[in-house]
Amino acid sequence: MSDVLVYALHYQGAFNKNSLGAVCEGAARAAEIGGECHAVVVGGSGLSDDLCRSLGHYGATKVFRADGPEGLAQPVVDVFDQVIAEHGHRYAIFGGGLLGFEIGAGLAARRQGGVTMEVTAVRADGSELVAERPILGDSKISVSRYRGELGIIIGRINAFEIREPGGADAEVVDVAVEYSPWSKRAELVTRGEQRGADVDIEGASILVAGGRGLGRAEGFAMAEELAAAFGPGSAVAATRAVVDAGWYPYAAQIGQTGKTVSPKLYLAAGISGAIQHKVGMQTSENIVAINKDANAPIFEFSDLGIVGDLNKILPKLAAAIRARKGG
Ligand SMILES: Cc1cc2nc3c(=O)[nH]c(=O)nc-3n(C[C@H](O)[C@H](O)[C@H](O)COP(=O)(O)OP(=O)(O)OC[C@H]3O[C@@H](n4cnc5c(N)ncnc54)[C@H](O)[C@@H]3O)c2cc1C
Image (cartoon, rainbow, N blue to C red):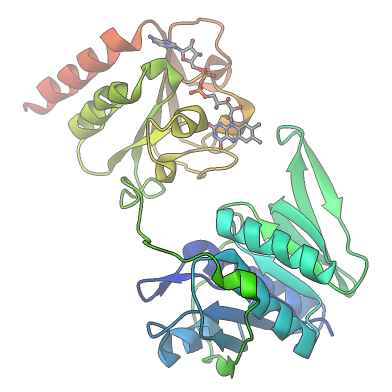
């Protein structure tokens, strides 16, 4: 069998973007190795026939629907385990995100599958799939081939593109799953979006990105003020260092383990320009960096560099833009 099984995470009646990308990728690659792409969806009453069928528009021919708790890894591992045992899928693909990592790792252990994480490209080589993963700060690519019965591919966030929806509905197959006792030991108490998750970082034409140079969480007020001065189409982004420190939400993180953006203007304030950050913003049309260290790596790939203290520069810049706009 050369079929590919993809996990489709959903929330409030819509599929997650990374999951839809994974379905599109799974469908394209399955076709190349002579198989089909199927999807697994887990959930209760919110899981309508129409929603499940709509995965066909992204290339899934069949959707295995299981009644169970959505948003936790172990129950989804149980569903994948059962579906693969019954139907013999050769590959499992997950879009980027922590849940995908957890499910993929659990599935690898359960079925003794090979697993590759942070995959940025999948290609067919004869009847096999091969996964590519950047390593050593994205300076090299490692290529994974799979031995054994199951190959597991976990994408990097936003690695798999969503193609234009179209085509036939998917067939929906209900599966009754016997969940492992430990799968029911955790309960999802609440689920929601982080502060800032509603901001469209990827769609913004101007991004004011803040790094550790902002000094503390409150320092982001300066970045927000500047973005507000630029007006609609502007948003605030962040480095992983500040997200890890809890200064700004993960939804705003740019880089290797965050989002990839290409705005018209990327204004980096107090960001050193580490390779893992650079890979997420280097295709911006114009990069302006403010840093007090004239030797900061970010200046090597900036169109305009301002050497100075952001605490003085950001408020003045915001005031100048407001004055120019007459506000
Ligand atoms: C596997 C892996 C994945 C990663 N993924 C990501 C990712 O997705 N995104 C990401 O961003 N990072 C990522 N990182 C982390 C990355 O390596 C860097 O540690 C991080 O980007 C540094 O963040 P920063 O620039 O905010 O902080 P720093 O490197 O500490 O830089 C702070 C900068 O602020 C400047 N500064 C300080 N005070 C002022 C001031 N008053 N005025 C002006 N400038 C000032 C300093 O000169 C310095 O250049 C990853 C790392 C690993 C190992």
